Image 1 (tube, helix red, strand yellow):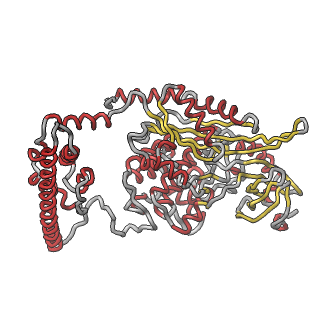
Image 2 (cartoon, rainbow, N blue to C red):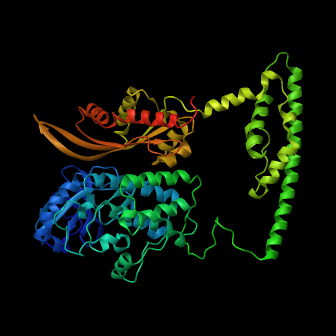
Length: 593
């Protein structure tokens, strides 16, 4: 049978083809229905040229077995391999979603809030591949599938290269990867290791945040020549609005010298997490930004004519004076109103109590010590909210606060209501507990996730840790029920109050395979699942211990027990690692509760 004779509805090796998903140099990919297990798969049928190459097929079969052993939530699994009527095929996990290439084709580039979590998940998957000695060789946008929750799956590990291989997978130059995302050593035909994929990840991130690959040319051959002989364009010149930490991250990922790059995927993961932690306000990138475009937040203000500068200065002074007058009026009204309110409370009180004005007094003092009196203070004390003010009058606000609201007028209260009592409470809230509180978040398979979460929490509790879950944090639970599940520390930090947890443990579980069992006339399904677990410091985003992963195989009769064994085997030591990390943090000088 010839590949061009295959059509929708055909059955090959027990797979009924439903529709074509794409085609490339290796062959054609179909969405197919596996009739025996009643599930959807992605079926790749190799081209006739490759199917007729005995040496290629022999090597492909051997290496496909190793690739099939990769078990990770962010890697599309190879489920089976077969041959029928001279055509060779392999079945892969089917992913519902859109590939990154299609997204970038429509949007050209994406925001840092989207790009960095994608890069983080890719790095996590590369870490699993590195432990098996597998190099993808063709990381590109179209090989990154993204589901509706922003979770990624890397496809096409079927053409992977193995570090310890004694021969190349293909003939020289036949499958060298997509040129724009190929590393210099790959373009020159040198031996590859995981650092080649690290370069490709950098090239992907470069494309996501700038709309352009790091190297372009009139033809694939021209691109290859540039990759080998020329330095790539610094990302800061292509998108000047990017923050410095992002530029430094991409520059190191795409270093031409392999020894100047990150050396392991775990280093990449730590660097991305650190970068995300530094970007409290992430600058969106909505499209291709030429180098001549004015910067939204330029590092150095461009020179302006003297007259324009003078006019700008006059406008600033007028605005500052107007803002100062408004602030003065508001503060005066606020101070008088607060004083009258306090006198009224004291007159009616028969005993020495802490009236509502005390809360306002203490909070007002705390605010004026740290911030200009205004919206933040008004919100805290339930006073009328002042209108928002421009950053250009910050100094005027501080001066107005100091002049119009002197401390003696605010804090002259009876001894039992003095601010130090409140100050002590604030310090206790800021202190770190001796034993950290660990927040567990498990996503993925909706049926399996609750079981895995229960066993993870039990293992951590047995380690002597305090454990909380997403169910105890309403805003997080609401987001998860709506399908807006956080996928990274950066997302979780924005939703979870700082006092709710010290460590967040992020886990993902999914079904990776199944097969029918027949015994004593009964039928059961043997299910295989995989899960990953990562502990992160809620405050800094730093790893609070080494990550863990595991697999479990079970039938409906022993599912809970087998999941418990797998979780205890993989997560059993994480509790001790978290405790050791926390003790080191306390020793570093952080205040204890």
